[in-house]
Image 1 (cartoon, rainbow, N blue to C red):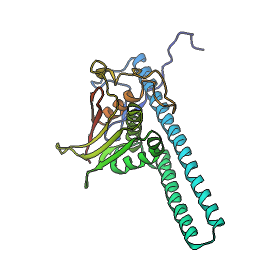
Image 2: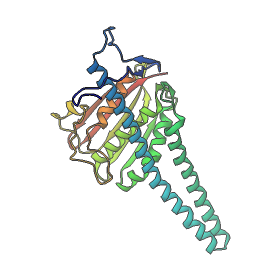
Image 3: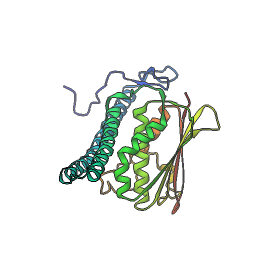
Image 4: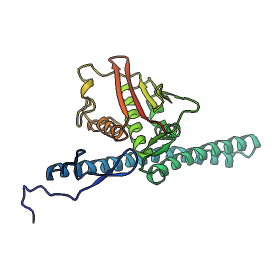
Length: 277
């Protein structure tokens, strides 16, 4: 049995590099072996990443459940309308609405299945435009509830990026939820995807018309456990101080770049550059 204050030493773990190949965490970049404490810290970080992944999947599932329930009620109500009204016009309208709702239900379940099992955690050429649209399907109800107008600008012919689709979707979810919270109600959210002027990058921008971040706070926003929020909002999201720290860690692991620009009372823009396929 370990002594009460002993630090258990986990086995050496591995993570994926930007090429998708495992990289041992048992030694530093220069070849020096890691101490027991350093290995333990890396082990804990890996566990935290896994917990964050599961929490994101849980949040996606919760959001999708609400969305799917709304779709189901639409189908039920129009089916009843079609049964009650036997004229062709009413039935055509009911069947049209049922078809529309069913197609939306298919998109919701497809997005969840992709997050849960279809997208690989390895780094591979990925269509970021499709990833953006999938993510917005899950957040549509929330954006509508708070009357946030969402604009997407996806450049025609934008290149694929070498990324883990699951991990970049987590970044997108964090940034979009943060933007919605910063806006409050009745604001604008822009998502732009384009080839960067530098041919090695694809550039993703998330810009909101929210409250903005004070200049003295801006350098700290990627620090773990730093948060400008007092706790989760009424939707149960945010306030842990881990969201943006996780975003930066994911982008760094992709050998990408993330920067933020913000003006109090005007809004905030996050710009992400990811390696082009």
